Amino acid sequence: MKEFLEGSLAVAEIVKRCKPGVISAYPITPQTHIVEELANFVANGELGSQVVNVESEHSAASVVLGASATGVRAYTATSSQGLFYMQEVVFNIAGMRLPVVMTCANRAISAPINIWNDQQDSVSLRDSGWMQLFAEDLQETVDLHLMAFRLAEDKSMMVPVMVCMDGFSLTHGIETVDIPTQEQVDKFLPAYKPLYKLDVENPMTLGPLVDPEYYMEARYALQQTLNSALNLIPKVTGEFAKVTGRKYNGLVEGYHLDDAEKVIVAMGSVCGTAKEVIDEFRAKGKKIGLLKVVSYRPFPVQQIYEALKDVPKVAVLDRALSLGSYAPLASEIKAVFFGKKKQPKVISSFIVGLGGRDITKGSIREMLRLLTTKELNCEFIDLKPELVKEQYE
Amino acid sequence: MKEIRIHARAGQGAITTASLLGYAYFLKGAYPYAFPSFGAARMGAPMNAFMRVDSKPVRLRSQIYEPDYVLIMDATLMRGFNCFAGLKEAGIAIINAKEDIEIPKVNARQRAIALPANEIAMKAFGRPLGNTALLGAYVAATGEFDLDTLYKAIKHRFSGKAAEGNIEAAKQGYEFVKKLK
Image (cartoon, rainbow over all chains, first blue to last red):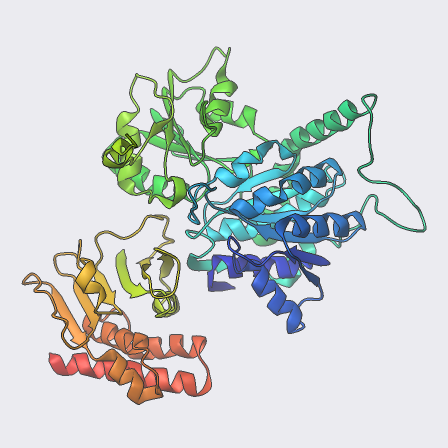
């Protein structure tokens, strides 16, 4: 049934239907109303989860790690500094092969302090061993959450999944969304049966000290597993379509790619704005397209190669930086094509919408205007030159 | 596509207003997208809420710079901000009037409507929250949907006496504007 719902509440609705046994979070800025609403569901008896209110994000992540290790479906949500405070445990959850699902409400990182939207938080944790799936709108956000539990708990995976939704534009945005019914969710997502768990009857250890004789193999296995998720994701989206009728690729999504001369590559809600601009250009006969990266981890190298190999000019839009180097998404898009016969003539890299700087249709048009035969690296869009000039004498 | 910009201070219910407005459009079968933009993120600080609505899902995520309609929930904001910036050629501004605050002149085809929304709300339900009176005025001034649809949206959000009071405020806001014509 279609409803008009705020992003955070829509996520709470779908997580409720996924029935996690344990939910833990730290209720302070930066946080969203997701966990608050889940706590309401538990308080009024709609949801039988145990909600653990802790004293920090480090503890919130530790609680879901512990819960998951005992064989329970576990969920948490955080954002920005909160995710960074979780970082040590985030790597542990992946290393211990625990299928936790987390929502990351993408927000900027301090300093300067900024509560607004960009993607520096989750992008900085790209090496943690979690799958990272980026949503464009609320429908995709909701659907990715349901698929996230399925992916994480698949017996060939047992890895955590982070669903990334842009702060404010999606977390606080209200739009029409169709939340899958409990019946549909139950059909798609079976009850969680762990492959292994901490159990006093059958004692085992998770995450022990591993000396140099064994460590590399554990990391190799995790790398192989994440790469194999590239095969699993399309299968899961296919099954999702059978239950809900909504079709997703799950790895990348192309928009007017076939004959495109210029293509924007981006992740998250900015893809909607880009599509609007593309429609305007197409109406004037300009051949512009978009490649939306949904799965940032694992990174769909082959699908990106196929989508862009015949495109003359590519503009990669990053909403995060790797300070002192190439932009994160741009460097990986370039890596896809190194040494390949077929490749774009130009791959230019643009930094857009950091710390909530509004991304308008004008920002996208400016990026496309600057996408010429001259390759650009980390070109900042919508920068205010008068502010850049200020300095201490 | 129609674009609506709401000017308010944090705590004055701008998001609730955008959400009521969005829900009314949703009931009509349209696709609304409402979202806030916080300034200093604390009570009393100037902030905006936005509502974009179309007959198909809205994909554009940017703020609204050329609104069809503007709702000004706190007239004191007009002292420090140009709340009319970018208002479309035949745009309409609906203002929660306050003594001593002048309403700026608008172009010939634009309308700026000031109504005592807080007073209406005080009489209707005893609290100076003029949001629903402003929405009643919005219905009368724009004709975007009918009063019944707004009542349904109010009932979806509020219950009991709060719903009754807000419906009364919406009705009076509507009638205030109708009498102006």
